[in-house]
Image 1 (tube, rainbow, N blue to C red):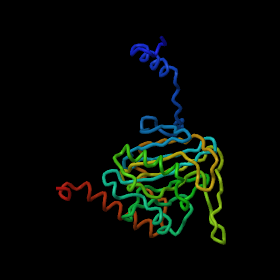
Image 2: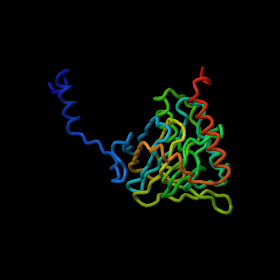
Image 3: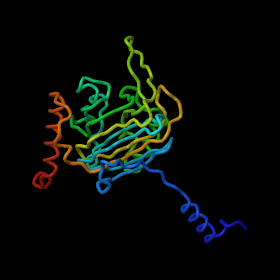
Image 4: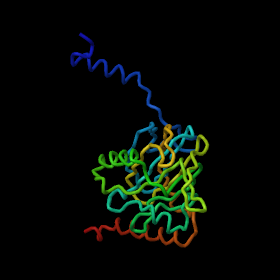
Length: 249
C-alpha cells in the first residue's frame, strides 16, 4: 500500500508537497511602499489570471526574461457590459502603437486605464490566438463571464508593425525586464493570458503582475491631447454619478 492510498496518507503527501513548493513572485521595487501593494503574481507560460482592481491602482506588467506575451482584456468591474474596445483604443488617439499617455478605452468612450510607460514591443492589431482566447474565456468564467463577453485583446511584450504595403510584421520581444505600467481610472476586471502571439508561435516565458494603490496618480495628466482629455472628462463624470446615492436610488 502506498502512502496515498488512505485519506491520512494522501493528506500527509499533499502537505509535504505544499511545504516544499516555492511560489515565485515579482520583486517589489525599492521605491514602492510594500504596504501599498495589492497584487504580486507570476504567471507561468500557458497560464492566465482574473483580477479585480480598484480605481487608482497602478498596475505593472513585466517580461522578466524577454520571452512572454500578455494578452490583455479589461471590463468595468461593476458594469461588465462596458469593456475594452480595441478599435476605439487605436482610433480615438490616432495611434495604433502603445506608448506613454495612451488610453485603453471602453466601448462607452471612457478610459478604463492609461498607459504610463511601455517599454518593449506590443500589438493592438492582430488579436489573440486560439490558445489565448481559450485562456481568456477560462479567466472570464471565474468572474461569471461568458465567451460573448470577451472581445479582442491587446498583446503586450510581443509586437507587430504595419509595413507600407499593409502587411503585418512581427517584431518579437523587447529586452528582458521590459515593463508596461497602467493607472486604472475605473474599477476593472483584468483578464490576462500568457500565450504565444498570432504571428510568433515561439513558447512564452513568465509574466509578472505587480499592482499597488496610487490614487494620487489620477491627478496627473500624462497626455494633453484633446481626445484624451475629453475621454477622461467622460470617465470622471461617470464615476461621480456612480458615487451619488441619489442617482443610484
